[in-house]
Length: 485
Image 1 (cartoon, rainbow, N blue to C red):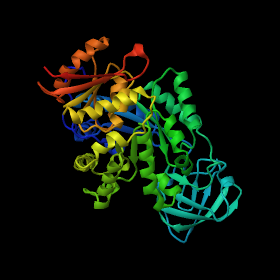
Image 2 (image 1 turned 120 degrees about the horizontal axis):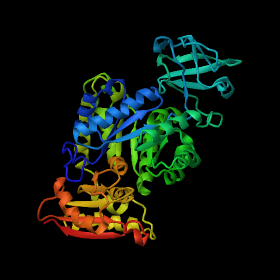
Image 3 (image 1 turned 90 degrees about the horizontal axis):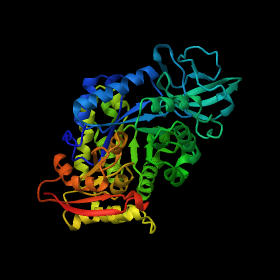
Image 4 (image 1 turned 60 degrees about the vertical axis):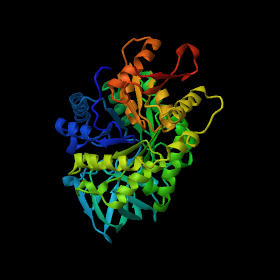
């Protein structure tokens, strides 16, 4: 999309971003186009499921659907990480009955899984287990208790039964020190992300900043610029959240599925609020994920509790809310996006914008860029600005402005298409291509015209423009007020 082509106006005035997972139920171009029109800002590709060939097709189809819709959308690749998973099952599903027994084995020669014997993708699995341990399957819905260990086999009693599927996760709380680090599988998916020019990468099961550094090193070695999002789904990560947030350039994802298994369920809401708050303090985006509208996998409407859950995450200050199985395998993949959109719009009317501009971000006296971003947002209230326009190369200026939660639209302009796409993650921000190779002063003069083209301002309005002068090496250090001619 060129700088002169207006954006599709559909989701323009919603501030909270919607991420939708692509899967078997949402892989065709027509459905993806309808999802974009309904309000999807970023599509997630879950590398834990599907082959490289399947995902390559999905990337191409997403790009084609976005071009047809007239909007650039981001693509987020989600790395599998060092999560334990079941191997393939006969018929892909097995039903485990309470009070029965099942054997989990890490033996490499084990065949297809059954309700009596399930293979785990880790030969060291039995060594990480002890008699009496609790093992969770299917996001905690199935609970096992270890009865005895026989070589590579772990014999368990089924305390809470249910259905399990091929490649679902296995949670063994307390065994984190034993689990394998991210290995060759993640490296292959990083290479895939580079080859297919994905916009963002989520790193699963982060436990320490060094888990991000390994992926960053791989990207740097290849000369790729793909910002990382740290998924917080382990108690260890929650405990070291400030360090991890500092290392994660594109922020965090509060992945409540595994976090809710690893932590006592009553601790999850408070942990979610704390993590979103920490990300805001550091001017970093946050994504709230997992089971947000899970009822809509089958039902055409969510429960009232689910609607409240989505709203509460937005009240807490999350940048984005994410749909997982709802859009990957659900029966209402477009309608669930529409429902998420409606909940977000209704909630945003009641957000404490006036308070957030002064109290959401930690003030750092020596940070010129954050100070200028805050001034730009505060001026919107005093001067009754129509919009804030942000020319940016890397997207950092837009991220800082977004962190102060302006009530008015933010239009972020970049000559880099990858930056335009990844800024779709930022609260309150709409992004567009800037004129290629335009000098900054010329671009600043063009900002008012571009704001009109994209529907965020009209003749006579005042807009703020904030950017960085490269020669000053201070980051964001320019703030101007323009009247739209």
